[in-house]
Length: 428
Image (cartoon, rainbow, N blue to C red; front, side, top):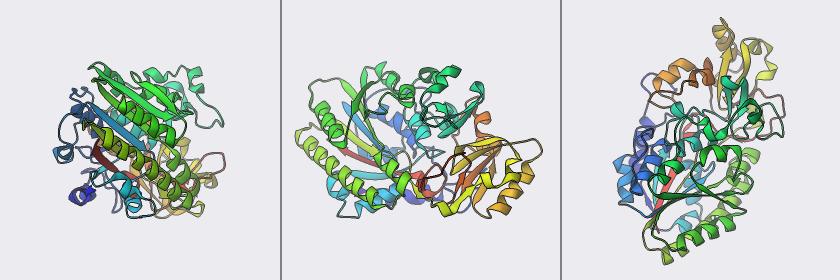
């Protein structure tokens, strides 16, 4: 494998936002050609299509150059939660077999995720090509003032509800029209490119999928073997039209949330993924005609968040008294909504309760500095990010929900581990 990460990491590691101090361990997104936000325009370019007006700039030439040329088909695979650092560790482990699976022909480069580094935000970016500031999906839980509710943006249900899916529709929420710009599927279809999505059957037509996959054909799959055999069949089919194939696999993310990123179950799942991926790539390279580009990346990385490190807001009545409502966003990047005149009391209370555990930023300053993207923002964004943003430090997470906390691995924060993702490319 050609590893380009040493060429790019010094620049990514040293990048700073000029008007927002993220601290020595805060990691800023590189929206100027080195992030997930720049990948959709790159895919349009590789397919010979014109990027949509709302799309972030294309990947930097230094990244796009090694991919060289135009392709009849582009395949993009998202392995949820497989950040660059864990990907590199897997590459170095011969028992996992990832390096062998990808082969010498593959090229590896680093990208930054978006802010927050979480699935709902990253996938919304990948399916619009817009910055989070523009599409307005900025967290797993998001305050939707227009609907009077804090919503779970995966399940499209009130965040406090348990076992509910899709009930935001009762408030008039329509996933098909929620995003304020056309999506990748529609944009490619308008230019004669067919888009096909392969996704686990249980979420293939979920609210989030419905929101994102406008203009695409959705093909449910039941397992890794089903995913890769179906993908192989799609690639071996006859036809000379252009096609964008996308697949998403979430099992690794589920395991890391439940057990932590270093758990043996995660390692074994990576081994299984490598086995299926290696078989698929070997078959595709033998049978392919060199007109398909295969890309593999992730939406974010993961950090271990042991329960002993949780900052439990429910145990701090003085802090709760400063809030006009419970926080939203991510437990690693939370949005606090304050009662008038309580900001200094809240910030002082945070530091007294959990010294060095949470770093606070005025939300307005973060928006102006371009933390969520450098262009014009969604008109609802200031409402959605509240008054103060709390970024978890180290292995900390903030908990406020009125239910049991069971997650031992999390993401969404501003650490290098969460923010860096791999971009693997190979011609098949």
